[in-house]
Image (cartoon, rainbow, N blue to C red; front, side, top):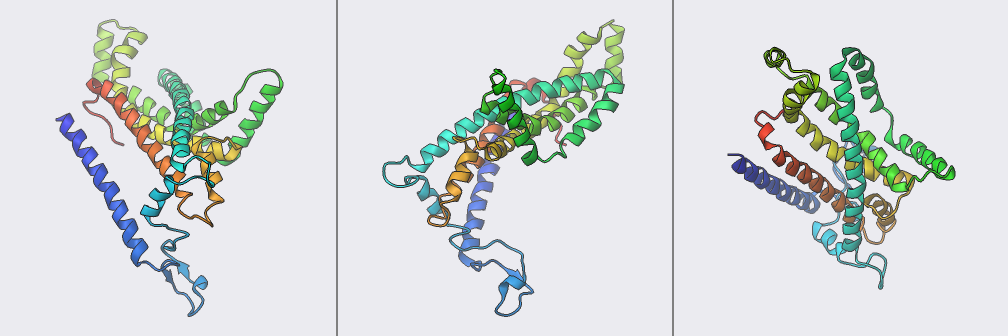
Length: 299
């Protein structure tokens, strides 16, 4: 039954990708180069309201041209082809995001356990967890990079990649904390009373009852945390100027958009591939926890 559901999910995923390809090419073929503009004064399209993206070759290349650009040298003869750099960038950014995801998971579980154990801690901590997500990531990244630089000046090793991972964890820990807390508190009162009747202590109840009950709520949060960790890692790479990853490639190829509009889309495809890889890894983890997925939460 579960295998059929997995195959159906993969099938619909492939159908969705093919649909995006078809819609892209149809829009590129038939839409105006300047996009659809409403309420424009005749002869002055800029005066109107653009309700769809531009379809010119510079703004929206054909997908064939984007794929072809992946197999061309980055900046002339003797330089690596773009797809090699994109693949290396995907692996590097994936490593940054994976470390950040693990950090976020540890922080989320600790916070959720503390808030579940003491209601006063939930009242005091949960609002700050929510407020933390209102801080713009683009402003937070340079501050953390400066702190890392100061630590290095004081002889405390703080590699630049760790700054990227911490920023990725900052973006990922919120959904994971909320999911873990919701799962830990989702246990039925009758089940708790049964554990109490067996004279089970806090740790026995936590390990045998609360943690298994939290898995169906935590798995969707882990998927969301994985994708947000990817976003956080890419934004951090761009913000603090870390090269070699997808974020660095996005900046590096953006300047070539004028001469070769298809080339900047290569790192974009790499970022999309990162998202698929991250969700796939979490799906493998969910298979390992399949015995606890009988009623996996979807909201």
